[in-house]
Image (cartoon, rainbow, N blue to C red):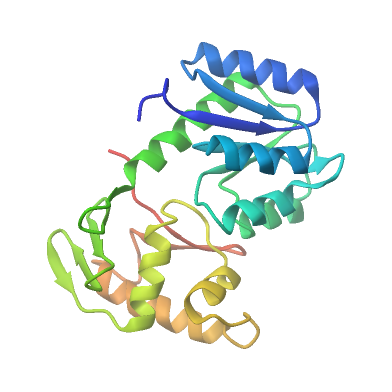
Length: 235
């Protein structure tokens, strides 16, 4: 996907910000920029336009961007970049915990936002899914969901069911911080309470199978206070 083909949806109630970002993104070669000023219209536009990335304000006239993020995450893994005047650490942590990929504090440099958008689009493009044979390829990793087979550098690695569930969810959210709460919901189908040790044990076992040095992981890293992230660099 080229930048000209990429679709960006901006949900923000400040008309000046919409106009400036639209102009800057267009100058950077992104032709398809859609804008919205409310939660309701933003979700409608998301379903209609199927954007490749979303820029999302937190404080909107009819609700919060956090709720928009949750609804988008229930149906899509597109990158979501929060735009907010909230500078407290708890606001940033919440943004990442519910599925945000970046958090940009207002006032910001429009040029910087454009570069961050382009970086997220490159990362998203790096995850290549072959729909015909159901293969998910991310860096050195390859997952065949239909056959429940996982490989690193072409070598098959035997995984237990929960380990396979973990790596599947992490691969589909590569380079994105995933909270322990999300892992519990997606892999165990349970509330996080009481599962802290269970998640830690399974993450450790998974590292032992995919890392050269499990104690100093290259791919599956811990993001203190936030959760875990499967890091695959875009070469």
